Length: 339
Ligand code: NAI
Image (cartoon, rainbow, N blue to C red; front, side, top):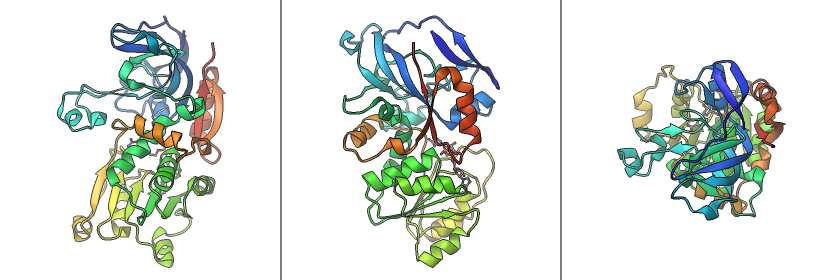
């Protein structure tokens, strides 16, 4: 089989590898579609502190089970599946309270273990979620990015009367907007970004107001409109955003952080306790695949609104370059895998 391998930072090759044999409890997935995420590009460029090389990248992928290991029902062969990249021990404290996404021995496919940018991938059987026939391949490959939004909304418990402010209209901001609007029926959603084309996508995904906060003060905009955000999601992830969000938040608001920056960020504690704000963080997803499959079945979200490009996997370098360089036109880039 052919696999997309990052041998070391900035060295991507399409390598011939032996067909993997699923171990006990695993299935082998013949990959059909995969999605490119920022972390794939970070591993490629050597900016992901968790990655070990060489690595087959890719943690958003969909395909068909074509072999099973011992202990897995052979009837699963032929199933269409989307793969949850989060592999957890099931026994540690976070696992015991339903947070396998921060398992003390967390393994993420495509980061700590070889992932899905490959013609075949072996994964634990319980990570391969059956996709109902009514969900298209293209929607199935988008489940993982929407699970990130499901995890965010799972932390913050949005209400219809929330005034939601989302920083960032990249894939993460846009999945969050769709979840807030389509699933939680939040009536007032504001999205701030620096790129007008992305703000247009945010509108298309359900934002009620968009603001280019590179050109206009967000504080002035909110004051003009009389909006006091009660739920703020930082999907732009610059360290300066938290203190600004604390200042803009309504008393009793919730703030959800998604960023992994290692740069210090200065905050004034009084701003938090004075308004009794709740600050959550959200990493990957905790058992959210069934949730998003249900959202898709009910038509509450529309992944098509994020997909801008598709490339054959053999053109993966071009695909990653478009993804990295053209944020105006590019949002979600898919890779197709053929024989
Ligand atoms: P992206 O880079 O495509 O989008 C970020 C957007 O934020 C861009 O459109 C950019 O113009 C905008 N932005 C930057 N600074 C801003 C500011 N000060 N105010 C408003 N907008 C600003 O990235 P993507 O894929 O949407 O991911 C967003 C962030 O989420 C990344 O930092 C990523 O590391 C993080 N992430 C976190 C996950 C988690 O589970 N916690 C999972 C996936 C991504």
